[in-house]
Length: 127
Image 1 (cartoon, rainbow, N blue to C red):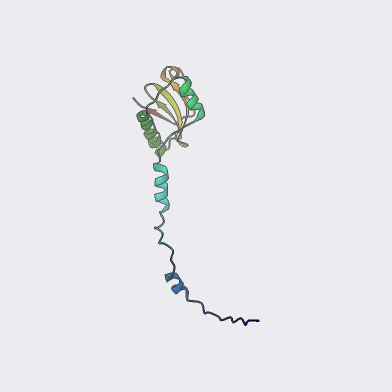
Image 2: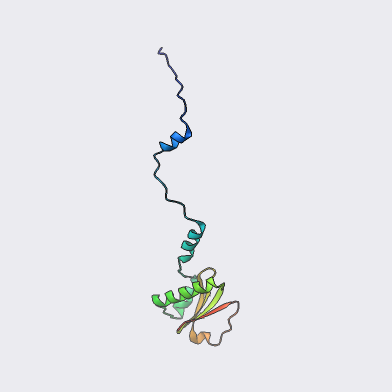
């Protein structure tokens, strides 16, 4: 039978091991504030299923440019503390949760003419 020889190898100091590391350098971590700005800059409104159905059944057409204006104003209102808003446009009235960035419901302006809107804390007028 062959003899097996075991030799002890002394451990290297930790400073030497760190220098031998082949890991690629990671970029510096972003601060919480930077992450928060990135998260809040994504200004895109969601349209709830209910609102989507109302837009379709009432044949309300809103262009991409108009959606962008609504979105910009809703996020501006949210920064000022508005949670739920009424957005009055030339052809439609929208109830929007600024807090959740979601269009809750929609109606045309003629239908909105004789309505009472409750539980809103801001109004956005767009022409």
